Image 1 (cartoon, one colour):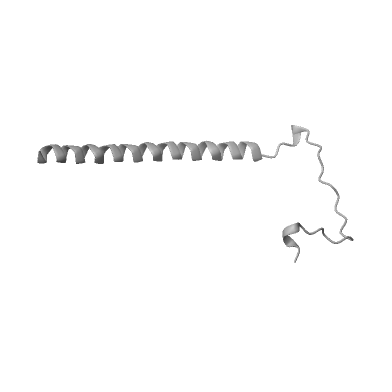
Image 2: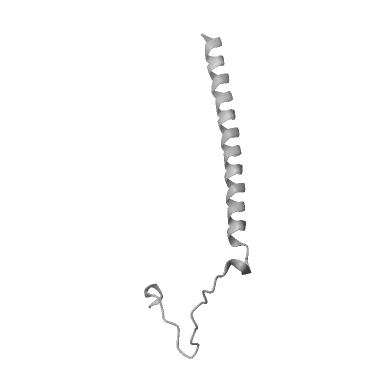
Length: 71
């Protein structure tokens, strides 16, 4: 009976260890792919033809407050 309990404990410990390793491995792969995607998307490419310009700001007028900023 005690031998069976010890075997079960070893089985659980082993399974927990393998699960942690798999999660860490998957997490590091996700992190690497997320970083790579970010850097690929954020690289400046002047040949991309993006002609979109931000709207001009009229600094002579006060800034419009958001509802949450109203006191």
